[in-house]
Length: 307
Ligand SMILES: [Zn+2]
Image (cartoon, rainbow, N blue to C red; front, top):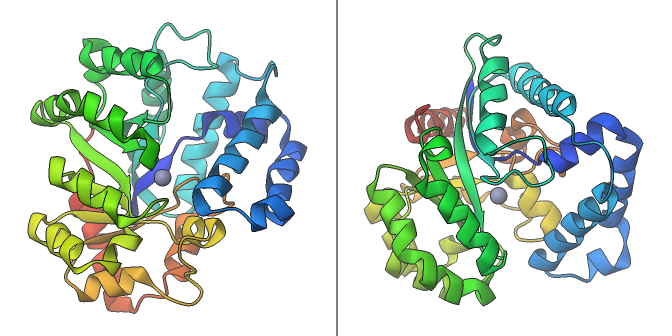
């Protein structure tokens, strides 16, 4: 049985897949476009999400019934691929789901639906997308300092691009505060930008886990930091391969990290966007039986408890 530690909820894309499944072709068509082929990994991710945004803009598909159904589908998919636990990254604001008074309403529906699934648990990570404006980020940190949502999350998961470092600096004291209050801290590093940025971030905060981290393995000093703090790298083979970060069909960063004594988990990242599940990801990682057992054990060890 698997634990998924790096999995985005993708609520807009899931709503689209449920209500207008034919539209998913329009998202996947991006992969074959010339602009996608010529783009950097960060630009590729932006192209994909811009397409999701344009396909969902103004659509009347974000009702409460749809929300409940996409949760059922997510939990059904998890059970079908032998997942026993998910650390799920969710948006801390209500976004397009306008009937919610706060994200807590969404978490309540999750809890109700989860009660029908024996042997499956979900912990929630509040996604903090540092590419958002300071006004939006202020609102997110307000939500996280308030009881209703904060009491129900197990951690936070940060992502940003190099141009967002001033914002990272501005909110660093709040991030540290959330960590010392007992929340787990995950940061996407070693994926969309070079190691100078990762070096800076890791000099300022020690995350509990790192999303991806595959490029960190190119730098001995960063390997030392990850090892000495016992940080788990939550890797996602299809995502890396499709975005052009690392081609897992040619190499397995998971095997390399495990040989270096670094904890690794294998994950789906955005399973709907990339059309994958955990069993496929494990296969793509090309692990020996012993390495796969280590990954399963690390995933269980590093997952966050339900709050
Ligand atoms: Zn991710």
